[in-house]
Length: 221
Ligand code: 5GP
Ligand code: 5GP
Image 1: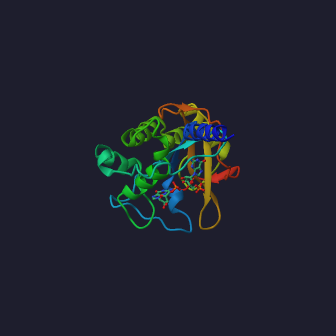
Image 2: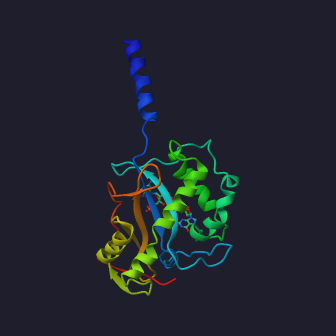
Image 3: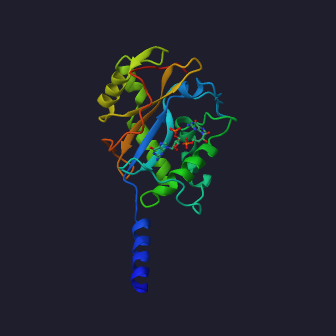
């Protein structure tokens, strides 16, 4: 009995360490909605970001809707590995949390929580570079503006927002909303799905919870 028990234990270990992620969510945030809530936001040390969608993160996920996180404490975020990307990240992946920062804390959090779970395909430099390359391929503000959807504090239908992004990027996004100080629903984040290599957009195997009503505000920034 004992050797069989040990064999099953070691098989279990192989199976669990082999459990790899299935796809990524590439998540962009709308700074106007991050800042327009009861909680304050703080502009980064480089100043007020441009009024464009910015990167929140690149998150490995499982097809069943669950996801791994904080996978390797030994593989700490190391700013030296992304020195060549830092200027671009300040522009397209700025931090808006308080207190004011230079972004390193935000990027370290994203690496520790999500990036360390992608070690099978991406190292630290390629993780951040993949996100920047995806960002260039999905210009969400332009997609919306081409469809007449402007960040002008007006309300737009969720369906029209999704359609505009689908027409430009080729894939239907998931949307997340938050509430402004008066309780209005506003577009806060856009989720696109990406294959395991971190390079190509794909149809989403599933979407995160739906937090948007049919009509949502698109606040100015
Ligand atoms: P929230 O609950 O504010 O939407 O998400 C909080 C944090 O949990 C996110 O910033 C992200 O780090 C993580 N998270 C939420 N939903 C998902 C998901 O579907 N997949 C992954 N990988 N992380 C998620
Ligand atoms: P997540 O929600 O990705 O798990 O965690 C985001 C963490 O990064 C939070 O602790 C949040 O305070 C910090 N953070 C710093 N800057 C930003 C930002 O611009 N947007 C978001 N969503 N989180 C930020």
